Length: 173
View 1 (cartoon, rainbow, N blue to C red):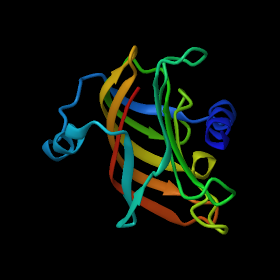
View 2 (cartoon, helix red, strand yellow):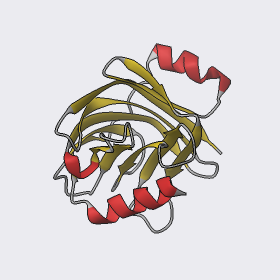
View 3 (cartoon, helix red, strand yellow):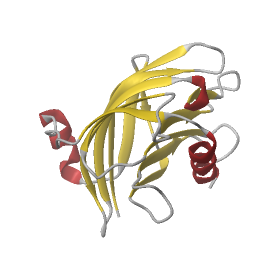
View 4 (cartoon, rainbow, N blue to C red):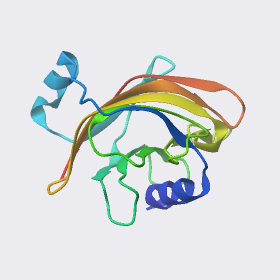
């Protein structure tokens, strides 16, 4: 629930925009295609070279009601308490699959963020700063199915940076 509230709040408050959108549908990398063969929902990435994998609250949405043609990617890691690490990407004004490069200041209000990496480092991305490339390979509704990869840099509340590589997401209802 905290993740959903945080996603909505940040989406409304932040003034960030989509910098570069290529509507051409990207081709799914072979390694990612092999990993999606079992079709379990997942969200995983490397943060500064270290594996990070969501173990709960994995969620995706394509053009949900009340949002401006949004694609939402979310997941959490750890205990469901104040230490839960919540991650989300919200892309707005999207028609579907494509390649999106977003950074703070984008006019579509698109955002990426990671909360609670540690008590001292409680927010990366969002209003702190980010530059990320997201390849959305599949985005459908009824049933919802979203598949994407991502990579980039997120600035933290302590002015440090996280380098995100090998980000991958798959969600289906």
